Length: 254
Image 1 (tube, rainbow, N blue to C red):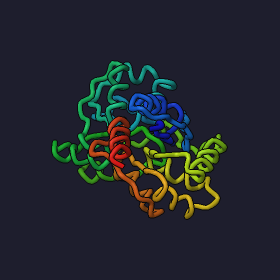
Image 2 (image 1 turned 60 degrees about the vertical axis):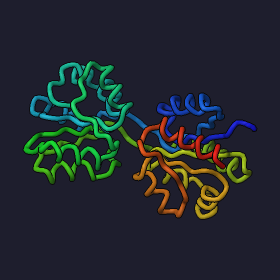
Image 3 (image 1 turned 30 degrees about the vertical axis):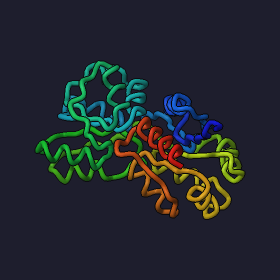
């Protein structure tokens, strides 16, 4: 049997681990980023850094947040003296590499999961900093505020339309020619941008449902696929490895 061809749409700087896992599991990875991430030193980020001593908690929702802070304000991370919550293993591991201690990481790697953990622990009347991308969902800050906390939002990076859309167009062509066995999506924007690049969204959505296996990292990304009536699967644990293992298990059963 030939190696399964798996398309990876996540940003290039986050995709190497995914490619390695695909190869480790016996497949061939094709990287076609549908999203670019750019650290930015915004006024809101400056304001958050200035308010460091007022923070009771800080929340890192992605590794790019840490990369941005390390780029513009490395001293901020070295002298951070508040509780730390993270979403996802990769974010937690990168924080620990910076010498930080992770105090809270929900089992459910979503904003909803983190809000639920704060509620379970009765965390209220706290000042919570959330550096992230401006395009992120409002679920996290609104959920924490609903619990009676003060939230300081800061834009730490931009989520951009892919600069190299030719690679994505090449992937779409391969899908149309039945050269791809599976495709993975790790955020709603990876889905939206992918469909936006297509000249025929309805046709591409049909191919993703009928001609290959479409795998989402979790239910939030899955909702973006549902908007286009794309059939998909997702793992019980929302990590890249779990997503890839489910992908290969499913292909083998087919």
